[in-house]
Image 1: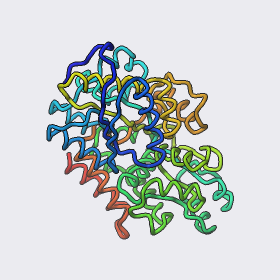
Image 2: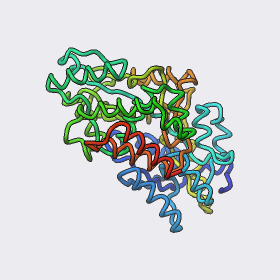
Image 3: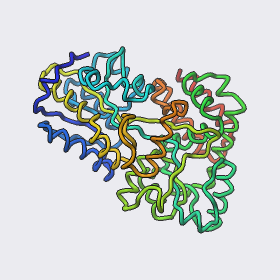
Image 4: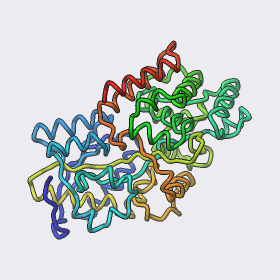
Length: 401
C-alpha cells in the first residue's frame, strides 16, 4: 500500500479519473465533483469508458501494464480486495482519519471500503437497489394502487396489461435482471433470509422452500415485460416509465437522475416506493473511487485531494441530487433532497434496515458472475421451471465457490 501524505501536501495536482459514467445524469453529477476538485486547484483529466465491466477491466489492465489511472471508479467488494492483495492500490487513510470517516459512514460501508484496516476506496454515495418507480397516470388508467406485496403486484400488472400499458419496463441485461430478482428475494424471504443467502451461500438455504417461492414469484413476472427488453439499457427503461409507456421499473435510485434530467421531480408524476417486501430494508450499493499505487508524490497528493473533495458535505449534496442517490455520509442534512431520497435517508437511520448488494457481501467475483448468469438464464428461458431455475442457481453458486 502506498504511504499516505500530510494535509500540507494537498496542493494543485493532476488526476486522471477513469470512470463509466456516460449518461446525461451521471455526467452532470460527476461534473459537481470535478468542479470542486478544480476549484481547490486540481487538474482533472477525464477518461470515461462506457460500461462498468469495460471500465473495471480497463482500470485493472492499465495497472497491470504499468500505466495506472490516478483515480478510478470501481465497485467496493471482493474484486477490489483482490487488487489490494496484489499491492496495486494506495490508501487514503490520511484524509479518512482526519475527517472521521469511521463514524460518518454506515458500518457496513466502512467495512467494505477497507482492506486490512486501510481505506482503499472513497465512497461517494449510497444507492438503493430495491426501488420500484411507477408512472402515476398509468396506474390511474388501469385503476390500480401501488402494490404492497408481490401477489398485489401480479394482480395490478394483469390490469395494466389489459389497459394497454406495459407493466414492467426492464432493461434486459444480466445485472438489471439480478436487481429485480434481489427485490423479489428480499420481498419473499425477508431481510434476514436475504442476508443469510449472500453472506453464507449456504446450500440448504439455496435448496429451501423459501428459495423455491422466490423463483416462483420471479417467474410469474415474465409475462409482464415487453418483447423488446433484451439488450435494452437501464436508462431507456426509465424513460419508458417517464413517458407512461411502462408502469413500473425495478431499478436502483440512479434512475432518479434520469427522471430529474427528464424534467420530472421524483415523487410527483413518477412515484417511488420500495419494492414489495415483508419487512422494510434497504439494499445498499455504493459508487466509489479507488486509488492506484503510484510512487509519484504529486500523484499521491492528487489522490488525497480527491478523497477529501468527494466526502465534502457540499459536494455530497450537489453530486447526489443529480445522481439520484443519497450521501454516503449519514450526517449530511436531508431537507434539500427529493421525497424519495428523504425516505431513504430516514430508513437508514435504523441499522436493522441495512442490507448490501451482492458484491458488498464479499462474494468472490466468480460467484458473483455465476449468480448473474444463472438468474439471466432462468429469466430468458421459455421452458425452465422455477424448480429447475432454483437448482441451476444452487449448482452455479456451488460450482463457482
